[in-house]
Image (cartoon, protein in one colour):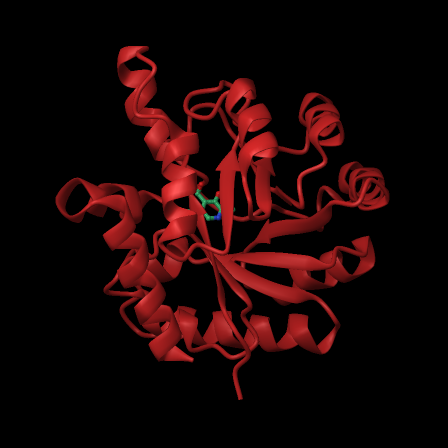
Length: 240
Ligand code: PXP
């Protein structure tokens, strides 16, 4: 039996469109509120080191104005840790970050970064933030998450979404979700999910949350953001 599956809407790319012109619109906070009205259970935003989309001011406004949990995605740096501790969002998802990448291209190497992550996970947890590690669906990374005491992992679905011809990646995700859950870690998933590929991921019973952004914001051009979020919700609910 599958439990409920939350939808976190990532609004980064509303800010991308805004920043393309340096104008005050479209407003990512307005998009967040509209997503909530349409069925989002939470809002996700990635404050990148180069501030290419979401800005510090967006995080401050989201923290103040959202009626649902905010999931702040950030790199494992001192600057980001200080920002997270200032705002104390409901959740903090630690992601790998390289300035030259177009998007978050792979999972965090939690095993290799153990010594950097350990004090951060502890400090964020003590501040009341639910810490999540954005990792590949891999036993070595799950083992590091267990040793770090992270309550949540988010599995990177990029490899699944971008051409997984033989179905192995879906199996890897399902096995990883089962392993995490067995060890008391709540599994989430995200990256590259669309109407066409979300169903098998939403059907993995241990997964409790999907974070979806780029596709929903793109689809909003054609149907409106409310409608794109609503349709995603329906597909996710049907899969459970
Ligand atoms: N989850 C995490 C941790 C991410 O870094 C991203 C991309 O910023 C997403 C989910 C959402 O991915 P997408 O925008 O491809 O739906």
